[in-house]
Picture 1 (cartoon, one colour):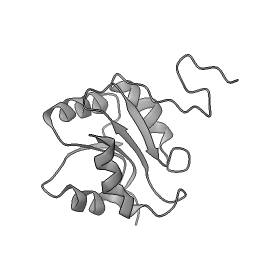
Picture 2: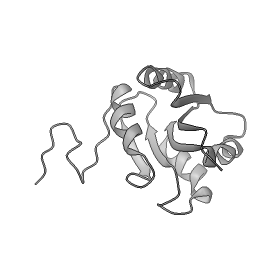
Picture 3: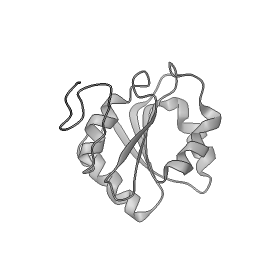
Picture 4: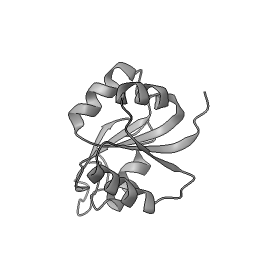
Length: 131
């Protein structure tokens, strides 16, 4: 199945919606879709999983781990997944960091939310130099 859009941003709460809106402001609207969590978040994520190159979840990491665990196939095929806290301060690269197309949401999206993603295997961390 061809992927419709590059990035899905999924939020649970009003605070998450605010972070999602800040993220969306930093991207071309054709590349990103902001999605409110439905009554069955697991069914919703399952139906969206193969439609996007990357996901940004604005919620607790534990929730996302349980949501995506049954959907994971391989690092070569899975979408990139970044989790951002509801304050928009921290972004965690959960899966697909290099092969899942996640570099874009991590390096661009995290900083748009007021947080920064760091890939410690490269020089893409603010203030980090390669040792």
